[in-house]
Image (cartoon, rainbow, N blue to C red; front, side):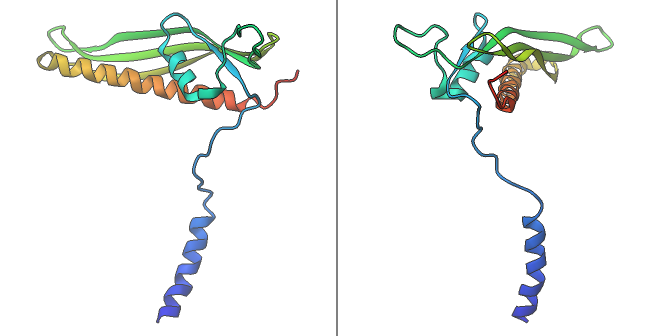
Length: 166
């Protein structure tokens, strides 16, 4: 009886192993050092720098320092709140929150590795006048979630650059 179960379990285990599932490992990059130049007050640039950690260097290193191999320029970060729906009495019922980030990646010599590109995230949020504080807190959480999604997209696009040579 035990051997029959093990014989039935063997093909099932083989199917699970062959599905291609693999945990996401650490990103590998074609460079060792990077600089992130933000627009003033850009939260995306700060979070991107935090994810890249020890790889981040200043664009203009101190005397005797080594300049970064690549530079990610955050050209713009825009947050919008747009009315999507109104109720019968003309009061807001639903908003759409948007974050748009424009960036580019270039080598230290100035050659574009990623042309200026936009990344846009949108989320819908309902609105209720009786729960204004709760909706404001939800809005902050949604903006933070969109920002994290954008940073993850940036990291994947940066990792897709395989060579720094022309």
